[in-house]
Every structure is written in structure tokens, then in C-alpha cells.
Amino acid sequence: MADAELKPFNYDDIEIGEELGSYEYVLTQEMLDTFRASVEDPDASFPTLAVKHDATAFNMVYDDQTGGVNAGNEVEFFNPPIPGKRIKVTGRIHDKYLRRDKPYMVIEATAEDEDGRLLEKLRTYQMKKPDEVGKKWHPQS
Amino acid sequence: MASSILDNATIPTLTKSITQDSIDQFESCGILDRQNIHNDPELAAQRLGTTYAIASGRMSITFAAEALRKFFGPEVFNHTGSVNLKFLRPVKGGDTITVSGSVIQQDAVEQGTQVTVQVQCHNQNGDTTAVGQGVAIVA
Image (cartoon, rainbow over all chains, first blue to last red; front, side):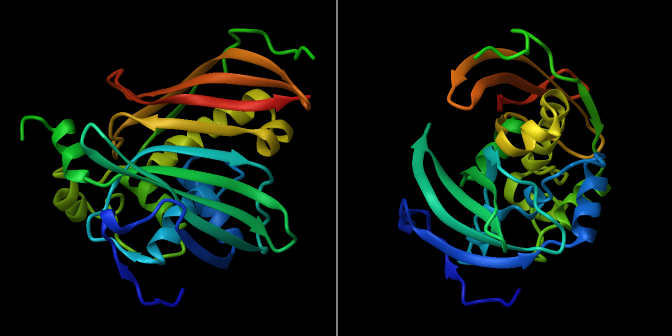
């Protein structure tokens, strides 16, 4: 993937509904095999989960030096992707909100293949203050 | 329309051993070649204050999807299924994650019966690492 000019990420500046654009890639048999090995499931059907469509869409637009912690995922499965087929992903900022004074951003992506088959819809709830989560996990430090 | 699935039926329980190698392998499927808190312990330390990299929550999503696929069958789950998990605790190399769940609701919908499963993931210490629901529509 060629690096496009990335925008500096600022939580206050992102807008709900903001389009993150589209990108395409070819799912290879090697990607599927590597994914299946990583999760010890020879029948795992959605290597797209490891490609992280929504986060990839976000990272193709923004230079995010803050990072984030994944607080949750919602994924809908429609059709397993087929190795060798080109996949088109479209992403957007679905939501942003504060909860317990912590900033959250919800990104989402929809994927379809070159034949127009809908594959997967994915949403990720990211908490954009990752050091706060680290403190919760390690309250002694 | 009633499904043949019993209320309170349990999904297959899965146990997965997490290693840093398996985490790295999962991350290597990405199309952007970049370091993150999953494959770079130093970045995880900088951003999270941890002494280790953490597994992507999407690995737990994948484990839950496997258990649900085995319960509903791939022809059902891979085309009508969904998973929704909240991540409560970090998962790291050396952990053992067990996925379990049971049917909590069945609703008639146009295409059949929408079956909802409560899903949870626990680590080797019995701590809950993720909770949520899986759903599929059984014709």
C-alpha cells in the first residue's frame, strides 16, 4: 500500500459520519492460511478479522500518535471471502462520545468482494486514552 | 417459527493457548506493515504502561465466532451470524482463553428464528476477559 499524506489525528476534530474512504486489496491463500494457523482453527472463514478493515481504513487517513485500546467489536458475517478475489473496504467514523470522562471513537467498515458479494460489517469501539486502561490493569504502578 | 435449538442450550466450549507467536502471526495478516501494541512490547509499554504486548480483541472475536460456527453450522453462521464482544481484561502471550456460552433468547423473524447466545471468555485464572453476544438466524 502506498503511503498517502496522513492527517494528524486530533480527537476533538474528528466528526461523526466522517468518511474514511475506500481501499482495495487481494486476499491471498497465504493470508487465509496464516490467519487460520494463528487462531488454531483450520476452518476459520473470515481472515478479514485479522486485516482489521475499520482500523486499516482509519490508519490510511490519520497519523494517530495517541493510539487506543479496543474496548469492543461488533461484526456481522454475510459471506466468507474467497482467496484470490479483490476486496473493497469502505470505512467511516460511526460515533464519538465521552464515557466516565474518557474519549471513545467508533469506527466501522463494510467489505465486499469484486463480484459485489457483501462479506462483513465491522465496528470497533476504541478508547482513545490508552494509558488510562493501562492504569486500570496495573493499579499498583 | 420455532427452531430446533433448545433454550439454554450450550455452545461448544473452546480453549485456546495464546502465545506471542500466535499474536504476531495474527497481526501479520494486516495489509499495513506497522508496529502496534500487539506486536511491539515497547510501544505497548509506552502507550499502556504494560510490560508486554497484548493480543488484539479480534482474536477473541475469532474464537467466539468459531464456537458459534460449530454450534449453528457454517452454512448458518457464516451467512447470518454476528458477534458483539466487550473486552474487559487484557489477553497476552502465555494466557489460556476459554470461550463458552448458552442460548438466552429466541425470536421469530421473517427468515426464521433469531437465536441469541450469551458468550464469555475467561483466562486461566478464571477472570472474565470478554463478554457479549452471538446471534444467528436459523431457518
